[in-house]
Amino acid sequence: MKCGVVTFPGSNCNHDMMYALGNILGQEVVELWHKDTDTQNCELIVLPGGFSYGDYLRSGAIARFSPIMDAVINHANKGGLLLGICNGFQILCESGLLPGALLHNNNQKFICKNVYLTPSSKTAGLTKDLTQGKAYKIPIAHGEGRYFADDDTIQSLFDKDQVLFQYCNQDGIINDEVNPNGSVQNIAGVTNTAKNVMGMMPHPERAVDELLGNQDGVALFESLINLSLA
Image (cartoon, rainbow, N blue to C red):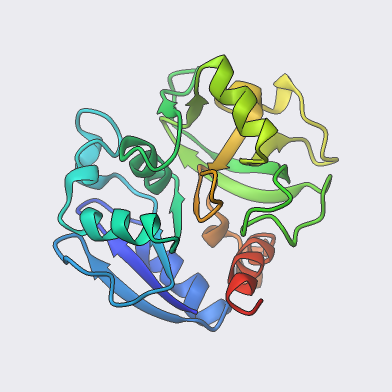
């Protein structure tokens, strides 16, 4: 799979993502600059984590207007795979490619730690090959990660199998005590109705190397990459 990783001013997880996809997963990876106007025929485009444009106004609000985004949105509208991680998830919501919004964490603090996620969607690329009910240890690092949408939207997301992950404990149990940021229904990531646009706050690219003591993120990327082999 040819993968393109977009770099915005302030991105700081772009090289982590390129390492994960290229060195660990063995995929072809190209770097896409925010001023580019095409996506170089990539099958998968990734909007990485960081602080695009300094997170001014709202996280992702300015990056949504970068020149590359017209091509990214066109790629998504044609059914191309698009993944946003952390700040990338925020950009996807600001662009209207995913429903909902990411608000300040309910404790009003930046949170950086390992959390556990359990897959919800059985049909989205990131989760379809994962074990339902299993807890995957994936790091978070965000100040605005509290997923919010109105009640009807939340119900629709669950009804249409669009919730990617929910925060849980190490046994896969979902409860308020393990919700790190106050996200509605412990939601950690969502997808669009077509399941080709996916966004999540946790960082699977930071959990792919045995040197870091955590490789749980590999399974997520393998599930996504397997779409091109199907």
